[in-house]
Amino acid sequence: MEEEMIDMMEELTEDPQDQKVVKCILLKNNEWLITEIEELRVDYELNLPNCKLTNPYQIDFLYDYENKPTKIEWSDRPTVRIGCTEETKKYEIYPWNETVTDDAEVLLFSEFIVTIVEPKPAILEAYLHATE
Image 1 (cartoon, helix red, strand yellow):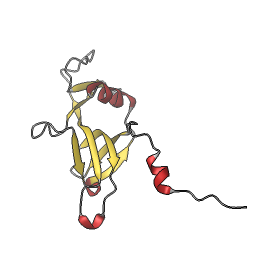
Image 2 (tube, helix red, strand yellow; image 1 turned 60 degrees about the horizontal axis):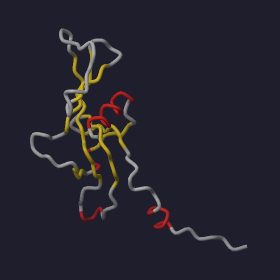
Image 3 (cartoon, helix red, strand yellow; image 1 turned 180 degrees about the vertical axis):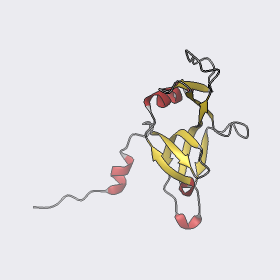
């Protein structure tokens, strides 16, 4: 009985390209981002960035004791405020580095990432709405 050989390059190219991978990432400078993220295959000896972030949004955690919104609207897009279970806490997401660039894609060295996690449903919904 002959064993079938698997072509690893063929396996890699069969992945759907249009499938978004949206994650929350914590950077070494303590900034939280929500973004589409893709690992790039690069030669590490060339010292090139190995992550591509598409539409990165920064997540800020705000404590607003006096002006907490009773109903949060999508009208302030691209900045989106999201309610939280804590009455005095809210999230705000906005395009990352919007003051210096309008680029939708940013290359990043993975060494600057502390961790990558699944976003909470409310943050993911706001991100998807903001990036439509």
